[in-house]
Amino acid sequence: MGKITTSIALCCSLLTATAAFAQNTPAAALAQGAKYVALGSSFAAGPGVATQLGTCGRSDHNYSHLIAAALGLSLTDVSCNGATTANILNTPQGDASPQIDAVSRDTALVTITIGGNDISFTSSTFACAGKAPDEHCTANLDQAAIREAVNQLPTELGAMLDAVKAKAPQARIVLVTYPRVFPTDAINCRELELSSNDTVYLAALGQKLENAFVSATSSRQSLIADAYVLAEGHGPCATNERWVNGANVADTGIRFHPTAEGHIEMARLVLAALGNNSQ
Image 1: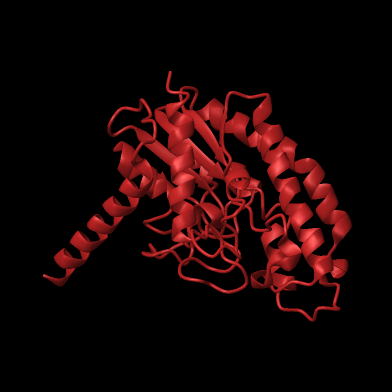
Image 2: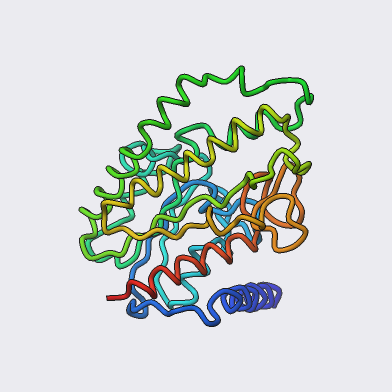
């Protein structure tokens, strides 16, 4: 009886979250039951967002699960904490095969959030949060290696998108950007718990990650759901409708990652992108 009650509760919770973003949003012309594969790193997986599925920080309320529920799709979610573009393309992650192995010719939809780990964006933020105000933590990072990774990222994202398209020629591919962690006035955001110097460096790194996403999709048929642009005003220091946590978890998720509300909004953006490009 307990398992049945839990299942009903999870179902109702998922339907509630789905309704929160699906209302008044253009519907995508995807057949019921069509195959949907979600690729990406922790920003796609949803660590800390209930309910966790036990592997890779995946949540049953991450944006891919919300999209699948709203459109009646058959979801295979292989997103995973710590994943890089290489883990999508050709490099196993632990016991898991490269994520692209989940994509096949009959895949109708693929969503992807990846790249932050390639340029050490999140790990650098983790490492520098909470340091003394006068400590220039990011000066101790291998900035030359990070700079080279940033320069290579648009090419790597492009190659990944091309590889996914080759495996699933008819699929709609949506690159979902990282919600903006560092708002315009990030230096004044106490929730980040970063020195001014580190804030400036990491905010610029986040902008470069966004630029790489835009660059990779600009010359391809892939769609982009740009949570970075629309997350302004919903960052770690937002008083309500916070899409991203700062150094402390306000409610759901983990630090410097999307909240449950953030995943709802990311799902809404994907659904809108599909609805506006449904042919």
